[in-house]
Image 1 (tube, rainbow, N blue to C red):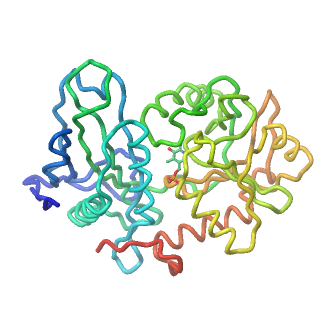
Image 2: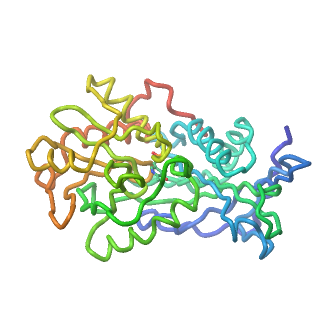
Image 3: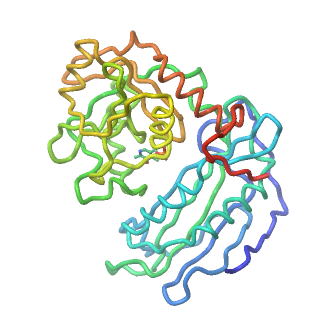
Length: 356
Ligand SMILES: *Cc1c(COP(=O)(O)O)cnc(C)c1O
């Protein structure tokens, strides 16, 4: 395996004020890059100053969109050291996403080495403020300078880093959700399980419409029947109904297999909750909301960790959940996961990887 070459910047940037970070706006001094050509494999893994790429206007990604990405975070512990949360899961998922898009696999060991080396190089950029993190964005895209429609034979893999503030600067409060009845995010046999840019491109319109009408996110229904709940925005979704936790099952390939989702299920089971991974129809959900059986509803994902839903709007009716307040189980999950991630409570499950 090739050594990672490190070329440090001669012009370190000024760091942004850590009390004033928004999401994905500032980038650190360095990035990881390596290239792929079909007959050479991956080559020249390197950490270099953060700078624009040069690609052909014919580059395949600009026309046919073979691109996949990941999102994870580096957390600063109270003792000042830095750690990652389940990065092996992101590495494995990126390779599954890549397989769907005919993009090449990345050796998991090299991927992990690249993550650790890059975060160590820019470790001064891991913010220390309350609920702040260094967001890590690995991504892989096809660069073949050809308009023919074929599986890619040239690619770039890169990792960039962005210091980010709390997802909810005003604190974790319930959000209003619009149940989308027109656009769909994924279909059976499609790319729903892959973390690919194309899924996001197709979801922007519904998100914009919902936002213009005063909603924070859309709740996606399945693309075949427009009946079963899939995800909320770019998060997985969980409901507490009559004391049990219910979440859409991911075996159909249309729901993104979230690492936060998986972690929440493990934690909930450890706490003795029954967790059902199954189809849940919008009618069942609305009925549960009307009868009061729906006790709590929340989204889960790396960016916000856990995000309570206060209002669900379906067919012009707004259903209020738990008096539009964060529920006790939602709060407990938030505290448990963020506690482990920031190193404030012990990691008993082997989820933490120390960086420096
Ligand atoms: C990334 C993502 C999630 C959440 O996954 P995590 O691994 O928990 O961050 C959920 N849905 C979609 C569409 C996503 O892209």
